[in-house]
Image 1 (cartoon, rainbow, N blue to C red):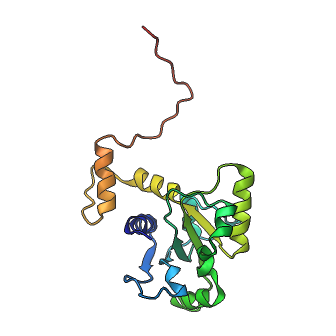
Image 2 (cartoon, rainbow, N blue to C red):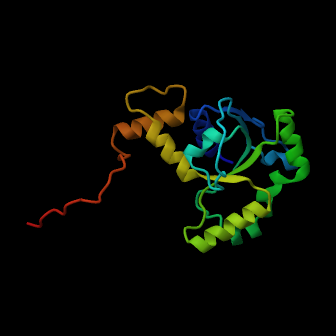
Amino acid sequence: MSAVSENIVREYFEQHEFLVRQHRKYIAQTKGEDDDIDFFVLNPLAAKRESERPFVLASEDLKYIERAIVVVKGWHTETFSSARLASTPEIFRFVGTKVFQQAAKVFGENGAPLKILVVPALPHEAQARDESIAVLRAKGVDAVIPFRTMLADLVAHTEVNRNYQKSDLLQTIRILKNYDFFKEPQMELFKTRRKKR
C-alpha cells in the first residue's frame, strides 16, 4: 500500500472522530499473513444502529461503527469486479480465521471488530456490482468503503481558511480548493443555456 493511500484512509477515519492505530510502521522482510492489515480503528462515540448496516459504506454510516480492522487496496486504476476478486485471492488473506483472531486481540474481549476493505471502485453496472459484493461477503468481508467516498468527504470538509500544517494531505486539498481546482457541487436541474452569438 502506498503512503498516499494510507494517509487518505487515516485522515478520513480521524476526521470522523475515530482513534486510528497503524498495524505496523515498518515493512517486514518476509511478508507474513497478518501484514495485510493496515489499521485498527475505534470509535469511542459509536451510536446504536436500528437498521441493517449497508455493505458499501457512506460517510454517514461511520458513526455506527464501533471498531474495525481496515485493509486498504489502493489499486486506483482497478475495479473490483468478481473476475478480479477471483484472480487475486490474496485480497482476502486478512479475513482468515487465525489472522483475524490475532488482530481481534487488539480490541480485547469487547466483541469482534468489523472487517472493512477500502477499494478503488466496484463495478458501475448493477449485476456486476452485486456479483462483486456477493464474492466479498462470501469471503468474509463485512463492508467496503470506496476511495471516492473518502476523497469526496475529505474535500467537502476541508476549509480554505483553516491552516492544516499538521496534515500534508489536508493542506494540499486546502490549497487546491483555494485556487478553485475543486468546485462546489451544484444542482444543474434548471441550468439555462447560453445563447449563441
